[in-house]
Length: 135
Image (cartoon, rainbow, N blue to C red):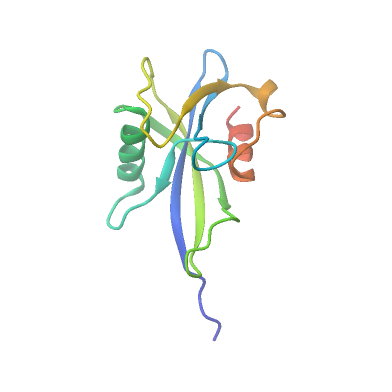
């Protein structure tokens, strides 16, 4: 019998500014190349909603949001922790954001639209695909 491949599960939020048809992206020039969206691994015992709540509060200071569905799922090809891989699940998230309070995990943020998808370097292909599907 073939041994099962262990995975961590990460959740990501593609937050939309629907009036301008743009998605929020984050940068951290100290830890990785490219742009990303908020999110992280689900901690043991957390539900998906609890993990999204924790990540959005920690990374952006966002307390209130709604989730309207899964946009994309992708394995992060650069992640391997002692044979454990990482599967990212990207959600479409609606949040009224008036003041973004970035954590020390990120150095800056911006709102990008469809016209911007060709120019930035994304942290991984899953981020780009999820944003494309959201917009």
